[in-house]
Length: 391
Figure 1 (tube, rainbow, N blue to C red):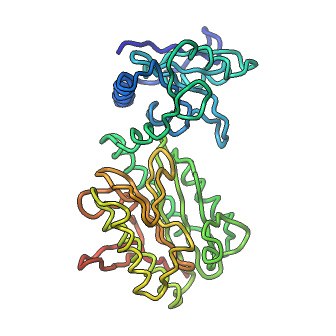
Figure 2 (cartoon, rainbow, N blue to C red):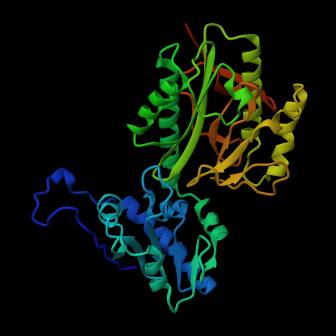
Figure 3 (tube, rainbow, N blue to C red):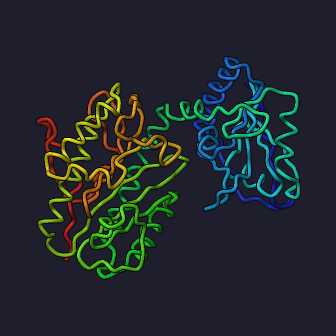
């Protein structure tokens, strides 16, 4: 494939540029983008399409190897990629094209079709589609919606992507643990969220979701984020972080003084459920095979309906939730997929992100400096994060 990159500059051509502003060529990213383009070119030929519009932010990040077509913290898509057999063309306005190419797509072989920001962006998309048989990853008049096919592409990761998952998992776990060890006792949930957000952002990780649940808050509201309640007894700190388009999640529990027997009990049970789910999330198994083994743990410990209070797990990737795991799901796990198990029992939560393997899943968010709790699943001792006691 032969293509060139056309970029825009935000300053005059004769403006002095320091050597620190000149980006080096990232051959790894070039290889990833070319690999994915080849897959899509084969797909277009197989399906008889002339081109494919990539507009969904998850697919945009996947194809561009980690770039974004969303403004920071926004929901408006500002760029679309038209993929053909031999080219990948970014459709964008004149305001955003310079930053997108200079900061995110430099040297990756993308072309640019640009229009003034005053023009309806749909007009440019319509113009490039005219007279062609086009597929699209979102509903768009005159195109064929191939959203589900694109999800299948996203869920098959390369070694490069697996390495990034592992690096991201360590970084998110480190940020959560550092926050748990260092927040000022008596802080409110929002203050702790601020410290966690700072630790994530300074490492290039976007906080997608943060849950700071003080003194049993999670029992009342399983999807609680954070508020003004102060931590007086214990707190669960949970985070979902995104870097280069990929997501991981983890949680840790901190207690001020010795934990009550109830807190130890619910944390232990949530951890046992999580370890069981991870142990049986094996390549080739379906969720309908894994779920009964998880459900039996709830039943065995006298809370058979606790799982109904909150979602338990989902596949993660270029979305924080690619496929939700529910009872009776016919999804079959594949080697290399990424799943987050996050069961909760009353005020106890145990969340970690796992890499699906032939055997038990591999933890991508392991504890770095944290008390450990050992649970047993089918005769196998599994270590998971325990409760950190602070005084």
